[in-house]
Image 1 (cartoon, rainbow, N blue to C red):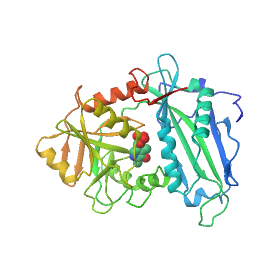
Image 2: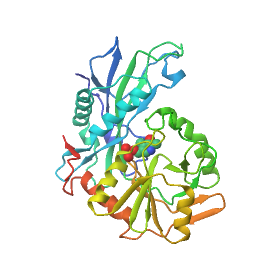
Image 3: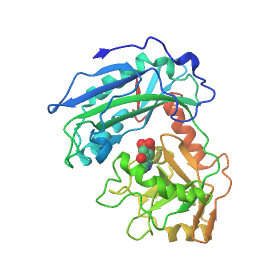
Image 4: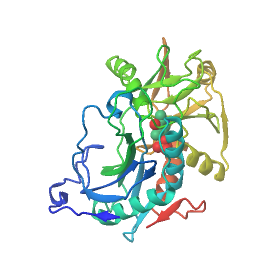
Length: 348
Ligand SMILES: *Cc1c(COP(=O)(O)O)cnc(C)c1O
């Protein structure tokens, strides 16, 4: 691997106490190109601009996919990754769907671990902070014929972040737009899924809501996800969450929370969940909690859900809520404070 280090680190000018999510980037980046049907020599170089001609394929047809994961420091100052193989597998599922080349686990892991060694001072030593990792792939062939590109770039950039508190979360159940459809790209982490979600999201935010609860594209009767997170409900003492499908993204946080809940003898059901079922549980007093789950916020309790004229107000979260208990368990494992019985932690 070619390694070029920065002449002037930006770390001294970085205010780690006032990080806003995804705006500050560490000193280096990993990059590897795909040409002539194979991955070329990997390199690490100072974080900086790319030079791409206007005819570059990704600008026109959006062959772009990404991942989101975090590196944590434990109390001994060692760097920990959480289930990185799951991110690689998902990146390759996304690559297959978007007609992009797969990346070897070895290339990905070597690039990532070398980058994290070089930028290790950017991983905050604090259990309320971590280094957000953004691997991504774009099509950088230079042609605008509407056929798949044959040249690509895979890169990894990183950004220090604090575990942010999302504030009050008031969601609206979407009845017109769809984030994804069965047969589409909803299960892939495709950049275009996000582009398509921005306008509907902005619309509900203008109405005073925080985010959308996405429903199935055909009937808008079944709940799929909330914002860019998977969603879970607590009905009495049981957790229910939409079963994965082609239109739902399989979150690694979702999978981990399901596993941890079961290990704590909490019953978990993965199945279709209709909007009317949730309203009925609410009316019967059985809906105790609702929360979103994803890498950026771990677990985000939901305060209210609005469906047309019905407003579901969820009680204040208390200390023993499932959201609180499961979140502290997951964070404990991620920061190396709680024993990792599932073999999820990769130590550098
Ligand atoms: C990334 C993402 C999630 C959460 O996945 P994690 O692996 O838990 O971070 C959920 N839904 C969508 C649409 C996503 O893009």
